[in-house]
Length: 347
Image (cartoon, rainbow, N blue to C red; front, side, top):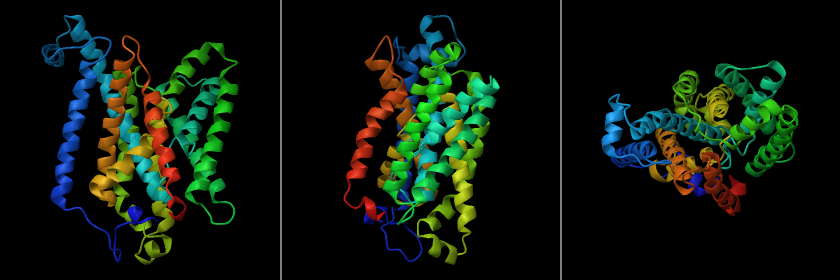
C-alpha cells in the first residue's frame, strides 16, 4: 500500500483526525447537502423563487412554479438516495478488495445489474420496480463474483490493475449482451437506452417507496461492517489474528455493497464513477477509519449526484443532460489520475 492508503488500526502509526475536526467537516458536509437540495428544487427549465418553494412545501399547487417544485422534490430525494448508495457501495468495495480503483461501474457490477434487468424484461416479462430491483441485485452479485475471480487468476492474485482490467473487459462484454438482448425488442429499446444512460429525471414517489427498503437494508449492513473493514485493511492474516472472521466479514460487506448498487441501478440506471471519486475525497477529510468514512461517503455521494443533476439541467436549459453523463465527465479524468500514480501497483 502507499503511505496515503495505509490503514489505521492497532500497531499502525498513521495520523488521526481529531474528533472536533471530523465533527466540523460533518456539519460542513450536511450544510452543503442542504444547499444542494434547495438548488435542485429551485433550478431547472425554470427558476423558482424562495416564496414559491416554501409555499409548495406547505402544500400549495396554484402556480406553475409551485407545481415545478412539487415535481422536483421526488427527483431531488432520489438523487440524494442513489448518490449516497453508490458512494457507500464504492467505499465498501474498495475496503473489501483493498483496491483504490474499485467502483461499481469500473468493476462491471453496474453492467451486471443492467443485463439482469434487460433479460428479466425481455425473457421473463418483469414489469414492476420491485422485480427490477431483485433482478438487478442478482445480476450485480454475479458480475462482482465473476470479476473478482477473473482478477484473482495468475501470479500476484487480485491486484488493483488486474481487477480494474477484468472489470473493464466484463463491462464491455455485458454492454454488448445488453444491446443484443434489447435491440430486437423495438417496444422497449428506446426507453431502455434512455435508462441505460443513467439519470433521476423519471423519479416518482412510487419509485422512492420501492427502492427505500433495499437502500436502508444495504446501508445498515455496510455501516455495521465498519469495524471489520478496518481490520481487513490491515491484511487478512493480521485481521484473523485480531479475531476477525475474514471470509464472513468480506462476504457480508460485499453483500451490502451489492444490494446498494443493484437497487440504485435498477431505479436510476448504471451511473458510474460516484463510488470511485467520493471515497478518495472523503479520506482526505476524515482519514481512513471506516466508522467515519462510510457515513461521510454517503453524504458526499448524495451531494455529488444531486449537484451533477442540477448542473445537467442548467447547462443545457431548457433541455437537460442526464447525470450519468455528468459523473462520467468528472470521474473519467479522476480514474486516469489514480491509475497513473506511480505507486498504485503496490496497493
